Image: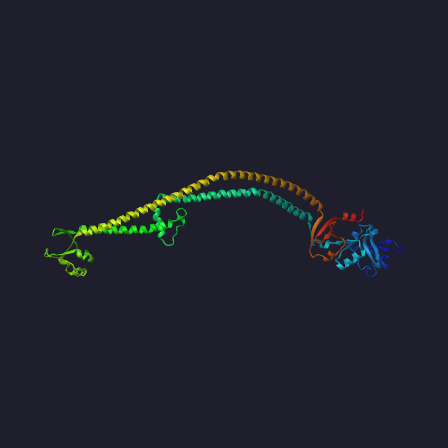
Amino acid sequence: MQFAYNIDNTRITPSHSGERAICQLCKGVLIGKCGSIRVWHWQHKSKDCDTWKEGETEWHRSWKERFPESWREIIIEKKGEKHRADVRTDSGKVIEFQNSPIGSDTIFEREEFYEDMIWVLNAKSFRDKLIFKPMADYKITELFEKNSARYRDIEHSLRMDGMELQSRLDGLRLRIREINEQKSSRSSQWDLIQLHINDTGKYIIRLIKLWSLPGTNLFYEKSFLPLDVEDKYKKAIKQDFEIKEIVEQLLKVDARLQEIDSYHVKMLNGVAYSLVPFERISSKSYASVTVQSKTDKNKTLFFESEDDFINFKIQSQAHNFLIEPGPRIEQLRNKRDVLQNRLLELIRYKSEFESDLQLHLSIAFNNHVSEIDKLTESLPKYESELSILEEACGQQQLEIAKKLHEVSITLHKERTLEEEKLKSDFANHFRFSWKNRRQSWDEASSPVFLDLGQGELFEILNGFEAKRISINTFLSQNGIK
Ligand SMILES: [Zn+2]
């Protein structure tokens, strides 16, 4: 301690080592210590009577010396307990300079005793463990976020206003696209139908081939042909097979007639007969055969039964077989007439069927043409509506862009102003973190100032914020003019 009473009860500092004085607190004897290393001070013969006091350092002394002598080392007595305050200002506030760590119980005890007090801690030894970040940076970041959120809100509401027009425009574009799609789908069908009309015969052949396969259906054709198309084409398929059969039969009949024509003619009793090889005669027509012996031309005979004819085979080399050709030729010609009539009928049916199909294809084709015309006619109305809407929309977009530009300028101005204000308002505010934090100081209820030994103090505002204050300001706040 620096102060003690002399014999006249005056506060004095030591003037030489070994000087005697009286302790302000315990009235015990103090001895002056005036060396060259430590600050000149008074010392009890035994331990310091104030257990709250730590060994005084240069730091303590230089702080105390910033205050008037009459404010330093003031004895405060309360309920029979006495302590020596480092400094008590003339407003009665106690300032304690704390160099070494103390626990939260001690902090609490001293705050209760002094009541109105301030702590100044020597933070020089742990200042590397303190990190201060300007509060303004955080506030500016917040400001930027708020500012851009406001911009986004305004932008959103402007875009919402434009939405109604935009959705009408989208709807119209969709409608036009649909019409064009319908047109093109109809056009491709139209091309196909045109192809069928130009070559109905080929189309029918293709249809018949296609429909003769099992499991085929008329889905496509039903879209433009009459509902009974299926029955008609089933009939057409059957008749097509029949035509093939008739043509084959006609060929056989013609071949038979040619064969008869090629036989030698033999006159017998004034009648012309065909000379027919035995093996070319059907056993069923045994009754029409006249047999002539090759050795005796006048000797003739007739078969009694089919068996007679069949058994005669072994003698066939020695005989001629004569048949009157007329009835057979007539029979074949009749057959040919019947077949040809049927064939004509079928061909007529086929051509009716073809023209029927052609008619329906034409109707379908015309339907497509008129549908395409209708679609084409409907387009200009939509297209002109579209161009009006597009213009309105474009105008609206321009206005929105203009408004947004204005908003962004206004917001930017506002932000710049607020940023400057934040920088000045929070110039001395910091967020701070403290590695190996001395947690007992979190319990302090009086103001705590950290002295980093750099001419300024940081007041801990709460666990994570601090306010920077110069030593001069601190002194003037505490009554030093
Ligand atoms: Zn004492």
